[in-house]
Length: 304
Image 1 (cartoon, helix red, strand yellow):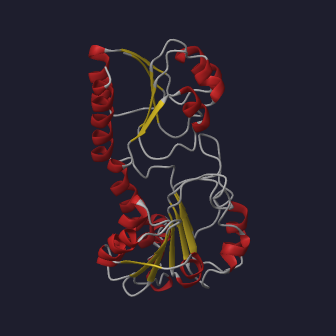
Image 2 (cartoon, helix red, strand yellow):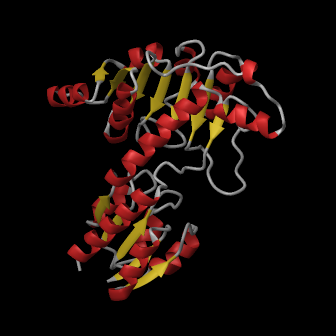
């Protein structure tokens, strides 16, 4: 098959695909380069950081399969794919555990000021009596979007002795039961926002959720609470978050996803010591990327 791989995938998977297929790579390319590379392709494999627009896909008359090596189609013109009958497959499972574990590690780091302590000690400052923190056990963890990843974050919190509450867009009796078994009690959105000591954002990005965490939402969070966003940049209004942090209303925040991502982009939160910023590394574990690569191979070979 003729394959365009527009984002880095696990090296062994890439080599395997090259053995029996015509594979072209264009990692994190812009629209013009994608248009040039995709013209004769049948399959497109991609992740976040690359925009798969209608204009790009329109230049590839043989394109019949999109494989999202992760979760979410927020960077794809889904309506165009449906109109043209292009099959779309995402691979959310392998990365979910990695994202959830990163989220939990960021909560621990915020609660104990680990990054601040590390920074000061590297400068020779022994700040033992200045760096008090909080236990996670006994605190309320709110899962804003208790789906695939959110439920895993909730399960980790429950195992740690946290009181876990969550909300979903469409609740069913089966969903309530499944989340309850993971230690997550479903409540309404307002309760998640207002009762959480730690608020984990795990929503997909769409028109409905863009900037859904804005000034009013942040003002309703508990004084001194913490926000963690592992979903998508654009869900949290970063300027409003900056105001909530500098005013002292929030105790801290950690973001793995950002409104503007890529080399040379600097977050408006970068100067705050109570903020942790990571470059969209949620699913970037060897284990997860190997599993995603294996699934990419399986999907393509099934359709060869």
